[in-house]
Length: 125
Image (cartoon, rainbow, N blue to C red; front, side):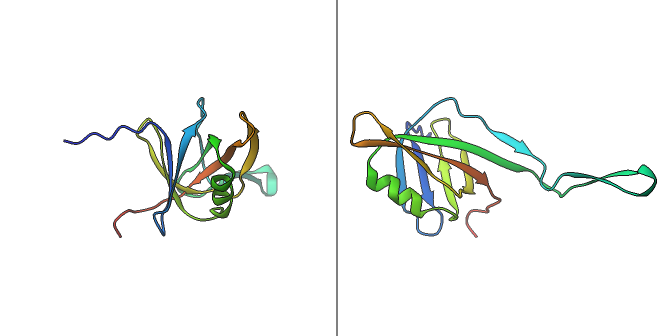
C-alpha cells in the first residue's frame, strides 16, 4: 500500500488540473451547518421549521510566503471548483468567492486567505 504524506497545502483546479501549492497557516477551524434553515411564524402563533437536505461546510485557508504572481493566479480562480488537500490528508472540493491578500515578511512575499465553500463532487465521472 502506498501512503502519501503532504507537507504543504495543494489547490488544484478541477477542470484543468492546474496547481497552486504552498505553506499554510495553522489553526484552521471547520464550520458545518444546515442549508436554508429558517423558522417561520404562521396563523395562531404556530411555528414551522423550513430546511433543505444536506449540510453546508466552510473552511478558511491561508497560504503564506507566496509570491505576487501566485496570489494573482489564486484571484483568477474565484468561483471555479477546486480540490484542496492539506498536510492532514484531508481532501475537500469547493469554491471561494473572495481572496484576501496581505503583506508578509520579507517584503516581496504575501499571504493569501480564502474561505472554501464545500460542494458535492464525484471523482471519475
